[in-house]
Image 1 (cartoon, helix red, strand yellow):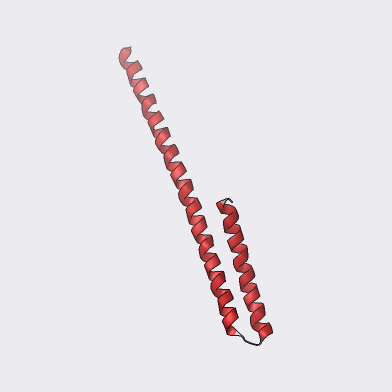
Image 2 (cartoon, rainbow, N blue to C red):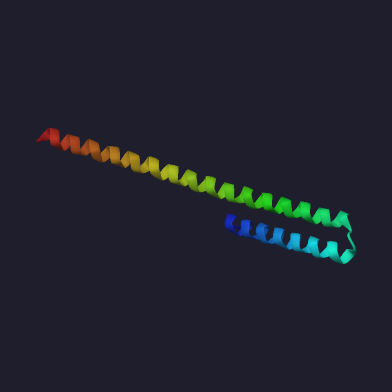
Length: 89
């Protein structure tokens, strides 16, 4: 499963848990135990959303760093070729 899909699942689960806890609170006549458990689970889901997104960004940054290193090496090679050609003439 892709990380973006995981983040969306956690996000929607947190919304549903908050709505469910709110509805249960008003329907049950102020029962706090299950309501608080629902809210805690929703907070856990929101934490998982931010953790998943953070990992996605870290992976993307690593890919960009690798690409930057590769491009920097290619640029150095091209500069060396230019200098060698200008010295040979």
